[in-house]
Image (cartoon, rainbow, N blue to C red; front, side):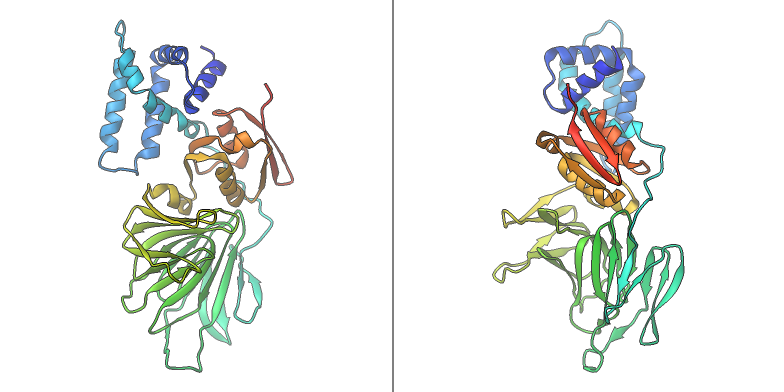
Length: 383
């Protein structure tokens, strides 16, 4: 079977509209191409290996065992094939990972990471240099590349002559940055984020910071000083834990995903609402339209892979995928066809350019795109 035809059948599987004839053809192809089929199984394992460490190896062996059964001559396993068709669909959905492994990510960006001091002065943080950050001739932090580390210090709350001093770090699209606060809390800032924090916290009371965008927090434990993160829609309260907080202005939904420890989340601007507590591997999300705080179990890897420079999409609609691509590559993406916005994709990318990512998606769903002056226009491919 020609690659073009098999691609169409794969697309049918991904859209859950494969016919019995499609399945029959794909079965024959799998028997004639056991190596390719085995590659799909391996990709599925690579993509899911962190989701359930206790079961993935067993799952992998079961899939490979089914492969051997499918490829044995003169034996029919139609029932087995139909039973595992859904698994094969999941594997094929991940096939983009196979094709995209070689190129460097697009490093061309127009903006710089900046820091704004308490007095309103703004400076560029040159990511290639190291420098000392001072306040009133007092050394308070050191920048090394894409990381700022503040001196470990507290302010006596009884000393009214020494109010909190705030800094704001702004991370443009296409870049990431890290801030280590004065209490030792580590904050990893994703592209398109703005983070406001004090250069030192009071010795008692809450440790409050504000976020626009997305960040991964590893909070230094302090039972006497709860750590508070506030955005436009959500705020969290923790003592010491690791979690991901996402609240972009152009996103309909804000969410908090707990990696370890315990965290409390509530809506902002609702005095009668109470905090909702999360356990590890749970997500609390709030929608502007529905006005409800929803808690659900999730695979945390999908939400924190960006910290390692990985774009991970799992059955996610193309509209929200393009939003993440805009931030990651510092481009503007416009989707002309509404039907394309709702197409769902699964994939994992780390070192690919924006062109290679889009070409990978094109192998699953046929569409066209043009790229000019960092603006991408996507259209449905004409038949």
